[in-house]
Image 1 (tube, rainbow, N blue to C red):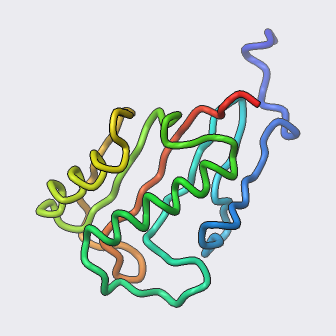
Image 2: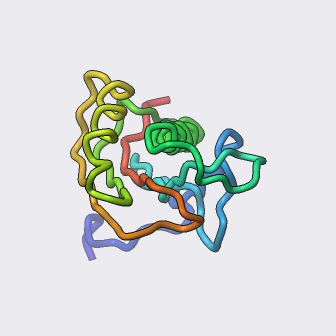
Amino acid sequence: MSKTDAPANASDIVAVSAPGAPPPGGHYSQAITHGGLVYASGQLPVQAGKPHDAAPPFEAQARRALANLFAVLAAAGSGPESLLKVTVYIVGVENWPAFNAVYAEILGDARPARSVVPVPHLHYGYLVEIDAIAAQNPK
């Protein structure tokens, strides 16, 4: 087996825990790093240490979900400028333009690959969830 065909060494797979983001609500990690990449789990617009609250308007939820994602990326040694691929799940295709506006404002010149997937509903009644793959910044 060549080096490129070798399975991942489990010691090279690192689970990330971000103190600035809400803890996982199930059997998963906030992110996993491996091979210089960060695989961030879906981030809902949950406020760390607070009860679930899906009442804020869509734009506020989008900002919170992005903030949670950025906290996870920071804990993994990455950041928004290193995003490679973002997947966004939104309740209601009518929220797509609002998400795009918030996303463009917050990411600025960064333009990672992106998919926006309209869905009928999300956990706890939230309106947006975001997961991503990013490069780790060199140490």
